[in-house]
Image (tube, rainbow, N blue to C red):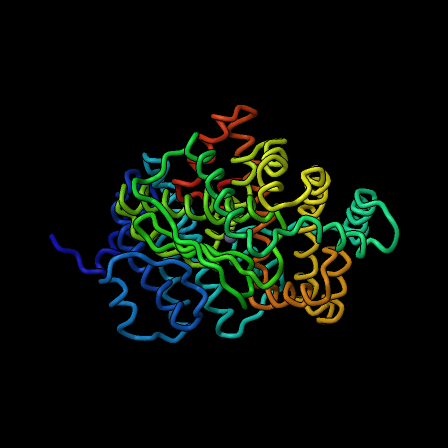
Length: 431
Ligand SMILES: [Zn+2]
């Protein structure tokens, strides 16, 4: 029997949501999934950054491009699909299908919120983070961030104000421009080898590496499908040596490139779940994507291994003094905690508590950035808004989940991490 789209939805509504429906048919989610993909592509007509990756069937793209729906019609369609999915998740026999059901509901709720924002609706920072990414960022006092800055002060002894000592120290760990490509390629090879020791990757996977300027981000992975990525690195500012491992793991192995490749292999190809062939940037999936990409650095280089690799391989390769490696790592660890300072600046600036001058002042104070770099950070906040939480809160949620699932055993942690990268898990599934 050939079902029409509306009869499929009606069937799903009865099967998935009727009280006492004991054996829901997982295949009925396919109709919702196709509609979700079309709506995501259609929201992309209004919001050019929304569709970060798309490699699904042409038939759905044709359907999406056939007409440009008003943005609130897209929101209403998403809301109606959420209504069909219901508030309770049916008791599917397969736990991945349970996650799929929740994934579709959560992504559609987020899509509706993003459409409302494109239409001019304003949410405060915390509400926006919850609606778009499914998580509420914690708050910290000014004293907390100032105490972290005081730790930096101790790590960087010498004369003059901290900002001058910090800038001087950082100048000593920058990769000379002519060696950036060499250092990156060695870092990428190390991240890939360390990932392959614990994770299988699709045959033929790979990526192209490009250097660019003038972008609001420092690195980006554009996933193209068939296990291929384009990784771009922004050369606007000098690149510090620890950014090589950072970007190589985050954008490549076991970060975005691996996450997208595994979703494609396990869910799009393995199960025929078309919704994973589109990646909406402003959605809960980004918290998992950014969080796993950042925690992926710790997966590839646990404990002291990162510092040792940087000291023994990358510092010499970049012509830098390896004796600075441990101090550089200690500074990095504090700076990572100060990432929550960027969330706080974003919260206050976007909620209208402070203006752009005050925001740049706080970025200089808590991130020790030069005025030019601080202005660029503010620009990132203006463009991406509460997206900033995905990097650090996402990382911490993924870390806690992997540690809970895998304990202290390295192989067990990788099993948990790999399961995360191959499943429809979302922020709520980690908590
Ligand atoms: Zn990223």
